[in-house]
Amino acid sequence: MQTIRQIDALRDAVAALRADGQPVAFVPTMGALHAGHIALVEEARRRTPHVVASIFVNPRQFAAHEDLDRYPRRLAKDQAMLAEAGCQLLWAPEVDTMYPAGFATAITIGGVTAPLEGAARPGHFDGVATVVAKLFNQVGPDIALFGEKDYQQLAVIRRLVADLDFPIEIIGVPTEREEDGVALSSRNAYLTEEERAQARALPRALGEAAGSIAAGGDIAEALARAEAALVRAGFGPIDYIALADAATLAPLDRLDRPARLLAAAWLGTTRLIDNIAVMPG
Ligand code: PAF
Image 1 (cartoon, rainbow, N blue to C red):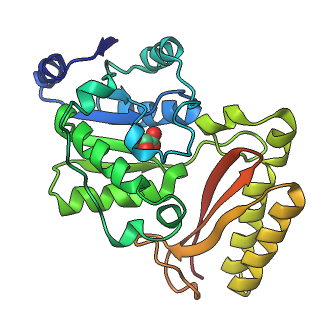
Image 2 (cartoon, rainbow, N blue to C red):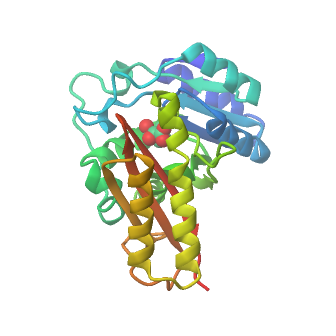
C-alpha cells in the first residue's frame, strides 16, 4: 500500500488505479483504526479491487473544548491494518495541505444537521461536510463507505452528495460491536476499565427502548426508561436519547415510518454515541 501526502501524487495514483476500468472505492477516516473501519475496507473490497482510504484528523469538526489534541494518532499501526485489509492507497495529508493559508470556504447543510449531534456540537457538521467535500474532490471515487455508527453523519453525507451533485454512490455499513454490544469507536480508547464495563448499558438501553417502541409501547416512556437506565449505569450528562425519522433525522412521536433511535451520553470525560434501527409494524 502506498501512502500519499501530496494532492498531485494522489491524483496520479488514483488515475493509475482507474486504468483497468474498475471503480474506485473510498473509505475516509480520522485514523486510530479498529475493526469497524476495516469492515468498511472489506465491504469496499467486495465491490472493487481499488480501495483508497484517508487518514486526516480534521480540526474543523472539533470545537475548541473538544478532544482534537488527545484524539488518538497511530499512523504506523493504521497503515499495517489497511494494507492487510487490501487497501491500495492511503491519502494522509497534512493540515496545511488541506487548509492552506487563506482557506475561507465552509459548507453548511440545513435540515438534517439541525437536531441531535448538530444541536449538541454546533459547527461540527460544517467541518465534516467541508472536509468530506474536499476529500471527494481530491480522491474522485465512484463509491464511498461510511459507518452507521455515525448515523447522522451518514445522512449528512447523503444530503451533501445529492445537493452538490457528486457522482458518488454512498454506502452505509452496519456498526461493528464488541461481544457485549458496545459499538466500536476510536474514542473507546479513552475509557477506563470501569467505564468500559459501564458502557455496555448504552446498547442495552437502546435495544430495550427500540424493542418496546417497535412493540407499540409509548415512545416518551421508553425514552425516559432508557435515560434512567443510563444514569443508573453511571452515564451523565445524557446529551440526547431520541427517536428520529431514519432519513431526515426529524424527531418522531409516532412510529409510522422507518426510524432510528439515537443517543449521545458521557461516561466521565468520554462522549459515546450509538444508534439502532426501529421499524414500524
Ligand atoms: O467519521 C469520521 O471519521 C470523520 O468524521 C470523517 C468522515 C473522516 C470526516 O473527517
